[in-house]
Length: 260
Image 1 (cartoon, one colour):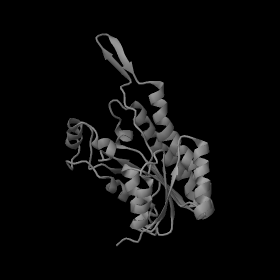
Image 2 (cartoon, rainbow, N blue to C red):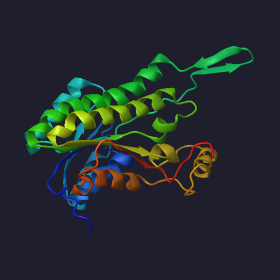
Image 3 (cartoon, helix red, strand yellow):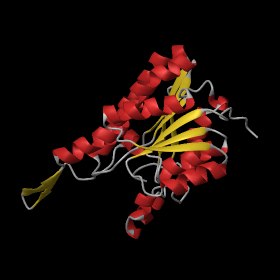
């Protein structure tokens, strides 16, 4: 059994109330970590906190809008006041607002991606990662190190139809991560990204079966991933087992190659 070294560590998981974030929070709790779950949705949080305790960790929930700097600062201050510091930040929060850049039919524009759809996705998926990381890093430096793990996507590597905003945000996360690896390594802080493929979150499972079947056909392992499988990737990257891994993008996608 791998010794993760995560017992007692303070972990923030953004977007942690459901899907991959929830699976990640529970997985870290199972290693004895102290987990601060952040989300804009606060339904079911009592059950989540009970599950974290049952898994073996200590947990707290904070309603946080990661795209708002003041909200992030208040939440970070509360975590530090409660547990004394922060060792691990998992930038998992993300949203979708899919639309074609320009939809053209019969010689005219039918629709376009709106400013609001673009800005909303960039606000959470990119600005949110920036704000959370910028606010947490000073506390990691004071602790003598830490791990920053951010959610990218295979879409950030390859692009995707109808996802200009999402693909842009996830590609930018990769290069912010690489920049942080260079800047922060001197302080013992490692920065890495995870690029999931098609994963069976609540949002994905609600899609039409035809779309789900198409996802499976594009994946060499011929199935959709499970949230716990992404959680395991986060766990490994945060653990002592990955102590020399810095500035990488770990694809967890079943071997996905778009267009095959």
